[in-house]
Length: 462
Image 1 (cartoon, rainbow, N blue to C red):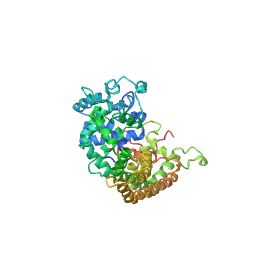
Image 2: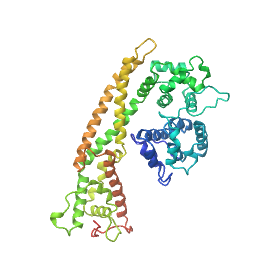
Image 3: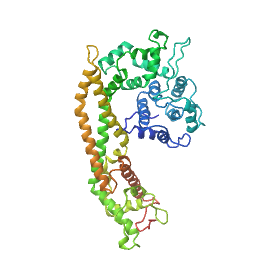
Image 4: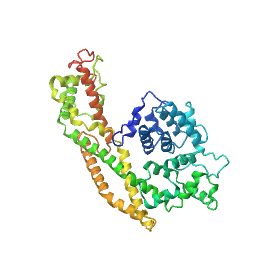
C-alpha cells in the first residue's frame, strides 16, 4: 500500500498518477489519462491532494468528504474505480457503502465497469446542476430521517468539526483559525447554499425544526453576515503560508534549473559532440549541407535512433565515445540536479494559483470595506491586519516569479526554443529524460557482456 511521503511542490498530480501502474486501465485509459479526460486542472489537483492526505491518515470519511464534491457527475465518478485500487478491502466496502448513501442509488461509475464515460455523460444530463456538488431539495425531517446526497456530506462534516453552531459563528465573527482545519473550511464552502437554496431555507424561518439536522446547521449559519465571504477569507488565511511556500519552491526550481542548463559547460560539450557525431556519421553529404544545429527534442530520440544492424542506438554510441575520449563529461548530470525537479512543476497550475491569490486578496479588501467593524464582528480589523502583514511575502513571491520566468525565457531562447510559447514542464522534461536515458545507456555500455555495447564505427539510420 502506498505511504505518505510528501511530494515536491505542486507535484501531487504526477505523484498520485505514478503510484498506479499504467497496466491498470478503465475504458482503455490509465488513471492519469482519465484525470486529464474527465477533470479540470483544479479538480485533478484537489483529488490527488486528497489522496496524499488519505495516505498519511487513512481516514475514509475525510477522503469521501474531500473527493465527492469534485466527482459531481456519474461520468466523473469513474475515478472512484482507480481510487478503490488504493484501498484495503475493508476500506473499499466502507467507501462503497457511504457512496451509495451519498447518491441515494448505487453509483453506476463505481459498480458497472462496462459503462463508458460517454454513456455516463448522457445519464448525467438530467442530474447535474450548477456548483461543485449534488444538491438535493431542502428536506423536511421525515419519520426515518434518511440522509442522502449533500446531507450525508454535511452530517460527516459536522461530526468532524466538533463545533456547535454558536461556536462556529463565534469563529467566523472573530476570524480565528485555531479551531478549523483548512479542509473543513473548504467543505463548508462547498456545502454553502446558493441564492436559490437560500430562498428555500427562508421558507422555514417560522419553524426551522422541520428541517433535517444538517439543514438546520446550514440554516443557523446563514444568520452570520456574509457567511460565504467569511469562509473564503478564513480559508485564505489558513492556507496562505503553505500556498506561498509551495509556489516559491516551484519557481525556485524553475529559476535554478534554467541557470544550471545555461551555465553547464559539460552539457554544452555533449551537445556539441552529438552534433559533430551526427555530421560524422552522415559524412557522405557535402560540407555545405552539414547540420549546424538540432532541436533539443531530438535528445529524447537518441535512444530510438538505431544502427543499421539494429543492435545499438545513437545513445549507446554516444555513451561509449564519451567514455573513451571525454570521461570527464560523464557526470554532467551533477551540474543539473534541479532539472528533474523543475520538470515536475506544473506551470499552468502555479500560474492559476498565483492569479487566484491576487483575486482573493482583492475580494477580501472589498469585503473589509463592506462589513463594518463592531464590538462583536472583527472581520474587517483582523483581515485588514492579516493582508498588511502578509504583503511582504506576496511581494517576495511575485519577485521570484518574475525572476524565474525571465531566466526561463533566456534559457529557452538559448536552446533555440520560442520563449513565448515554451512550457517549463515540457522543456525541462526533455533534459530530465535525456539524463535518465543517458545514465541507463552508460550503465549498459560499461557491462562487458552486454550484447548492445556498440562500436563507434557502427553507421546510424540518420
